[in-house]
Length: 296
Ligand SMILES: Cc1cc2nc3c(=O)[nH]c(=O)nc-3n(C[C@H](O)[C@H](O)[C@H](O)COP(=O)(O)OP(=O)(O)OC[C@H]3O[C@@H](n4cnc5c(N)ncnc54)[C@H](O)[C@@H]3O)c2cc1C
Image (cartoon, rainbow, N blue to C red):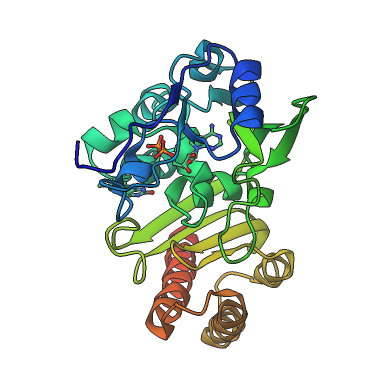
C-alpha cells in the first residue's frame, strides 16, 4: 500500500437495522453495494481520505426477489443480471432490452439495483426506466427509528439528477408494476454510453396507451446522466393532447416546449447538443408511434 494511506474500516452488518446503526455511528462511512460506481470514480485509489465502508452484501433481506400478481419486488442488493433473469418472464421486450443494455455482462453481474438508483450525482438507465414505470422504492431513513417509507422512484431525485437521500437513507427494495391486464406500452431509448460519455448520452423512456387515436396517460422521463432528470406533469399533459396521426405542427410545438423546459432544468455543465439530441429523440419516438398507429 502506498505510504500515507490507511485501510478503510469495513463494517459487515447482517441486518438492515445493523447497517443503519453502523451509519448512524459512522456518518462518513458509505454504503457499498457492487462497488462498480464507487471504484470507477477518479481518485478512488490511492486516496489518503478513504471513507469507511458499510458492506451491504451480508444482508440477506436485501437480496430477495419475487414476483407477486401485479408487481415484481426486488431487494436493493439484487444485481442487474438477476433482475434481467427474473424479469425475462414478466417484462416487455422493450423493458428487457433497456435493462440488458446496461454496461457489459461483467458490470451487470456486479452492479445492484440499489447502487444504480442511489449514485448521488449521476442518473443512469434504471432511474429513468423505473421512474417511468411508476416503480416504488422502500427506503429506511438513517435515524434511530429507521422508519421505512415507500416513495415513487420518480421522487428520489431533483431535476438536476441529484439523489435526494444520499447519506440519509438506505434503499432496501423496489416494486416494479407488472400487471398483465394493463394496456400500457413502454418505449425506452439510450443514446451513447451514460457512463463513458455522460455529457452526450441521453436516456429516454415513455409509458403510454393509445385510446381512440389519443395518446393516453403518458408518463415520460428524460435523463441527461450528468446534468438532468426530467419528468413533468405539465409536459405529460401536453403529450396527452396528441392525436394520431400526429401533425408536423404538433410535433414541432411539443419539441419546442421540451427544449425550453430542458434548458431551464439542466446543470450548468450541460451542452446544447445534448438537449438537441433529447428533443430529436422525442420527435423520433412520436414518429415511430405514428407509423405503428397508421399500420394498425
Ligand atoms: C464500466 C461501466 C459501464 C457502465 N455502463 C452503464 C450503462 O451502459 N448504463 C447504465 O445505466 N449504467 C452504466 N454503468 C453504471 C452502473 O449502472 C453503476 O455503476 C452501478 O449500477 C452501480 O451499482 P453498484 O451496486 O456497483 O453501486 P456502488 O458502486 O456500490 O454504489 C453506488 C452509490 O450508491 C450508494 N448505494 C449503493 N447501494 C445503496 C443502497 N441500497 N441504499 C443507499 N445507497 C446505496 C453507494 O453508497 C454509492 O454512493 C456503468 C458502470 C461501469 C463501471
